[in-house]
Length: 356
Image (cartoon, rainbow, N blue to C red; front, top):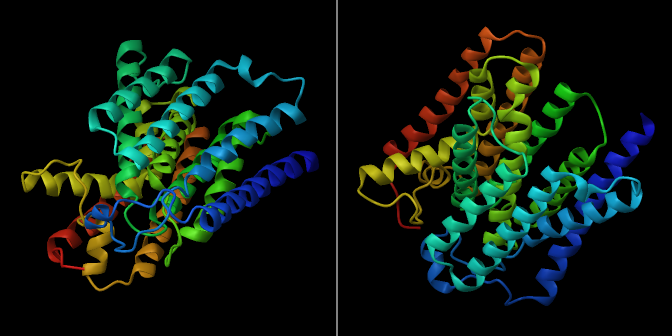
């Protein structure tokens, strides 16, 4: 047990330190690298151009965690694991596509094509949502899930600290949820999760208001894919792992993703009502409307920390209940998502956009 805890602590702390080192190097030696086009401040909350490659640290830590695991557990060949191969290959594609988007503003159809292919890679390598038990339906749902999460987290990356904090709590739900279902362990999934969680903590050191750098599309696309993968593995498939009703998994996933789901749903509804494309950027997210309501930027972050923390706790309670075959009461946890969504959506109606 002590050895397991030491391994987890080492990978987590290593992720934090390596992430901080990457971000310090970016700040000190790449003052103009990854700085967004001046026109982009129209759709970003901050009117100040800053390096937007902070999310590169996520991918760097991910790769180094694979190297470290291979060295420490040399008797295990991680690339014999089909699911890990899928995550590694799709992760590289998502990262490179995001990096290209930061540099060249990739066309939306190209991004969509890459996201679809990433979802297909998951399916081909054995990571797919298993709730309908009909392969083609579950496969299509998996690809759709990957597209939604990669775009949702990219859209949520609109104010200091919001996306990083949201992802942090989702991945913590996956980590502890996995331990509840499969018992405490230090397998490749645990140590990969812990490493990237550390990377996010290291990134937030420079991204919480007032931020010094942005995540960028390289970060949001990779971390969106990473979250989608572990969301399938430890949240969507909690019912199939415990042989319980599929609707319980749906509720667990929705609650764990409450901050991102509530923001995306609100933005999509409001933009469709105005006849706008949901994919066009703007200062009309739930985070922005909290500022219009009188909150300061740092207070908006506190609100999302609270929502994320409550979502994390409730998701673990539900997973424990599923593990204990206490199923029916889980439906009442939907009320939490409904209340959060109703509050954030109401804010967007009550406090319209202002010029910032």
